Image (cartoon, rainbow, N blue to C red; front, side, top):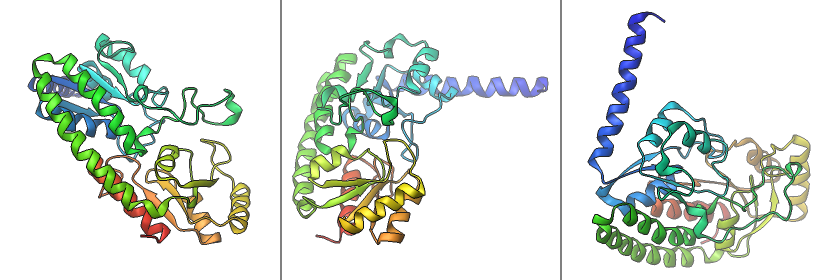
Length: 308
């Protein structure tokens, strides 16, 4: 690399770090949000008192993230890291925390917030064996697909913001109560809207819909992966086709970021409709915030199942 290019590179890098620092200085709490759902919830609760950096996008598998320099730089400037926990980020967050050398957001510090600690985790394995696929010791970490879990996380997160920024504690409490009122009303509407989905037999492409199915009362009859996180072979998918021909399902669901080929295989050979769900905020044009996430999720489920 030529000398001039080296100077330019470091100049751009320093300018970027300066921008991060300047942005953080404008807010009372600088937040590193691991996933889009927690970025959205933090903005709902923190308003203009927080600056939120979203580490991942809806188009990404939250398990498979690279510890890029930009992530490390934002983690270094953070007062609070809001993540799922339950080992969802185990492949990348610890590396970012080490390289950021920011004691505020290390595990156990006030600036480390794990949403999974505040909900009842499902799919807790009876044994831990890598032969069983991609399993998490604490349980299924994809808690954001049930709006009841969002409600359970909101109050502790608002309290944590107030703890870190006591001068604005009343502001965070006020925003939490406003959010909680709107969210409670929205959940009542979603529950009524989704009544016709209860009891429907469905398939899933990956074992990441446990909480959605628990909330809506749908029954997972087949999974298009032989084991969690293990891509299916054509032979396995052929077995799934045989199964659903004998035990029909109403639809199969997959996340927008996932490979479409397994669900399309089932659709083409067994005529099973596919519901491509946003999975998190930003996963579809309709899922622009948490409210839109569940509005769009239900609309897509109802349309695929052809029920109202």
